[in-house]
Amino acid sequence: MASTSHALVIEHVPFHADPILAAIDHHDEAWAVWQSATDALVARRHVEMEGALARLLATPCATQFGALALLRHLRWHIQHDGITDAAVLARAADLALYLRLDFPATEPARAPLAPALRLLSGLGEAIAALSLICGGLVVIGLATLA
Image (cartoon, rainbow, N blue to C red; front, top):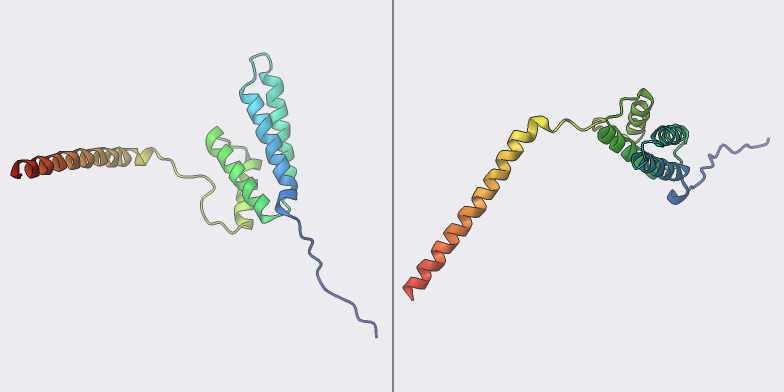
């Protein structure tokens, strides 16, 4: 009776050999060139950047590190550029599910928190000023006792 092996062979891919990292670098470079393009070249650079984005979305992640790097890259562009493209949002959501991350795909807006943050900032400055005044009073008081 012949025995067959049902062992699963898993290839180990070092994190630096993940093809998604090169795709992320290529997209970053295309995005930076598009941002700094002159008015005459903006349309051509935008087409190149869109092509780099399409290749980025089509490139598979070979490691969890690569998946996390891609998710971080996509989330930065979603927040910074206000991307609403369904393919980008879907890839980010799929990566979050794959990595078992339960935080939302985009961070909540900071506008509702702005008044509270300004209040805390002002309170911090007031406490610092009061501590300097009180410290000065203590030093003057000790100097007059001597």
